[in-house]
Image 1 (cartoon, rainbow, N blue to C red):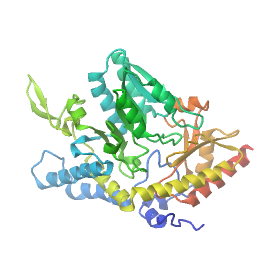
Image 2 (cartoon, rainbow, N blue to C red):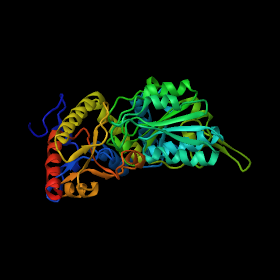
Image 3 (cartoon, rainbow, N blue to C red):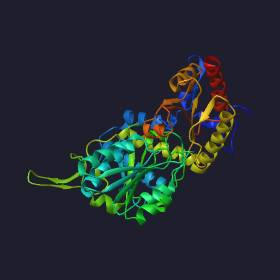
Image 4 (tube, rainbow, N blue to C red):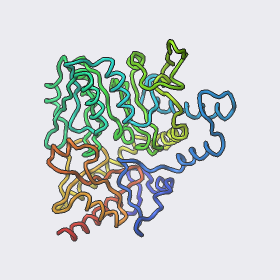
Length: 413
């Protein structure tokens, strides 16, 4: 097929033209970027929005009465409404800006967890989790005397829903799980998981980092209690993300960090706290990142999340077919519903060696345990090679990956 040909009505060539970095070469080869799951590249609109702030109207926000401060505040808070609409939240005050999903999960663990967990309570995770949705719960569980348990996966990497239902009980207080696995791509049935958790009297937190850039998210339809995601996975800046929470839950939770902007009044005798969302947003935020995030959401909305999902599903199907046909390649994670990534190992070649050889061909992939060691242990492997797709990839990128893997096979036999 022609390079950068439209797939399902998506003009990949025009999309790629919006990403300056994709014109770069690596080791004299055209860049083939297949690591969007770690961090997506940024379109010019996002880059230019940050530059424009610094060049034309930068000031701190929420406090100043002068024009630059008010303009920056307006632009920053506009993003909150864009986020609300993007995830289907009821109120924008339910969308708390954080440094990223990791901070968002820690915020819930340290505020809701400290206030509500007690000895003997159980926190239910899954074997699919990123370390960022494991360690925060271990920390608060150790402090409060609670127990962390993990739902196993089936042979294809799907979540074992029978085991999940059997593990729920009156001691279960929180079910924290990934919407799409960052390591093997499994897409969980979030709505069903949430329904069973609520039936058992538990709350839910969803790590949506790998879902928000690729799937239509509606937190009200899911009935999610908390939902975390990061801008840098969504073609936006680093250092900015969102933890969504139901308003009643957020109102009942104590603040996590103290300082400016999260207070209403301060005396040495007592401090009263600001309303949502500012109660959880202490200190000067990532102003440029917040403004750039709005442009990333606009970029995705202009293309359409449904069209993005269809395009990436085609890439995943094509990549699965091509890699499955290679004798030395073994796919890890073959669940029926997957996100836009493919994870694999090869005979006689360590993932890091594979990644290094591919890099010499200009191909950027991720190699290792992907901050998801429990699922690697589950499959008795030290790690995988992960190729992950974005809206700027097409089948020619998959073809380049196949050619690169054939070179790996030539070297390692």
